[in-house]
Image (cartoon, rainbow, N blue to C red):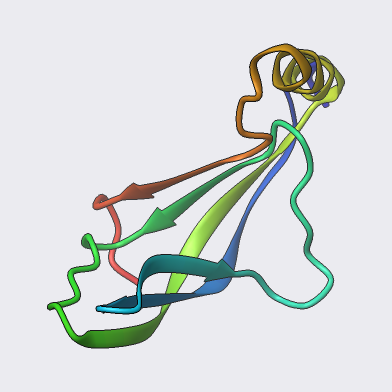
Amino acid sequence: MSLFCAARFDTPCRIAVQHDPDALHAHLELPDGLEMGPGDRITVHGAPVVVPFGQSLTIDRTATVEVAGPLRRAWTRLTAHFEMAELYEVSFSPGRLA
C-alpha cells in the first residue's frame, strides 16, 4: 500500500444518461457494496457516451477504481474543506472498450 493509492482494481459499472428538456445528467452506478470515499478515482473505459437530445441511455462498461491511500484521502478532505472541491474523481478513457 502506498501513501497515495491503497488499491486499484477493475469492476463492472452502469452509466445512465438522460438528455431531454427536463434534465441533462449522467449517473454512474457501481456494484452493490462498493462505495467511493474522499480522494478515490474512477476511470470508465470505452468510447465517449453521446445521447441525442430527447433521449436517455443506460449502458454497461468496465471501470478502474483507484482507492485513495491515507495521504491522498487526508489531502482531499483538507482541500475540499477550504475550496469546496469534489471529494472524488470520475473520468472516461477511450483506451479500452468494454
